[in-house]
Image (tube, rainbow, N blue to C red; front, side, top):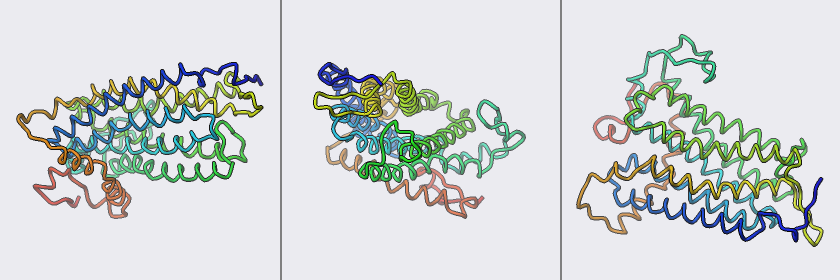
Length: 349
C-alpha cells in the first residue's frame, strides 16, 4: 500500500482545496438563502412553498456539513457524525418532494380519481414487468408513499446506530469486514434509499401526464441528481479505494489515516463544489416568480420568522406516517389542505 507523509502534502490538506470548497459552499449558501427568503417573503401558497423551502435547505445542510467535515477530516473521524446528520436530511428531501407532487395534484383523493382503473405502464427497464395487465389502485399509491416514508424512519435510526458503533470503535469507512458495522450499515442504507427513489419513480410514471403543467422533469432530475450523484460518487470512491488508487496516509508523527477516511474527505470536497451547481439548478427548478402574483404585499420580519417556524415543523411527517402505515388506510384517502377546507379531510373509498 502506498503511503504519503502529511508533510508531502495531500491535496485535501492544502489551503487551496479548503478555500475552493469554502468559496463554492458560501456562494451556494448566498444563492439558496436569498431564494428561501424570497419564498418566505412571498408566502402566498403555504401548502406548496412549505415543501419547496424544506427541499432548498438541502444546499446549506449538505454544503456546511461537508465543508466542516473537510476541515476536520483527520480529526478522530469527526466527519462520521457530520455525515449522519447530513444524510438524515436526504430522507427528508425525498419525502418532501413526494408531498409537493401530491399537493400539486390536489391530494390522494384527486390523484386516485384520475388514475384508478388505468393500466400500469409496465416495463422491464423500470422493474414493473410483473405488473403487466394490472391497473392503478389505492394500494399502488400507498406503496409509493410508504416507500418514501420508510427512508425517513430508517435513516435516523441508522444514523444513531452508526454514531454508537463509531463511539465503540466498530465503524470504519471502507472497512468491508463482516466483523465491522460499515458493511451492514451500507447494505441497509442502500436498500432503503433505493426503495425510496423507486417509489418516487413509480409515482412519477403514474402521474406524469397530470404533473406536466408543473414541469416535474426538471424538479425530479435536480433532486434525484443531488441525492444519487453523492451516492454513486461514494460508490466510485469506494471502488478506487479498494483498487488502492486512494491509499492511507501517515503523518510526520507516524499516525495512520485509513483509506476510508481519505475517501470520505474527497467525497466532502466534491459535494462542496457540487452544491454551487445544485443551488443554481434549484433556483431554476423552483422559481419564486410563480408565487409573486400578489403585488403590494406587506411582509414583516415577524411574519417571515413565523412562516419559517411553520415550515420547519416536522409534525406533518409523523401524521403522514401514521396515516399511511395504518391498517385501515385502504378505506380512506386524503385530500390536500386546499381541498380539505372545502370538504371532509377523509373520504371513504
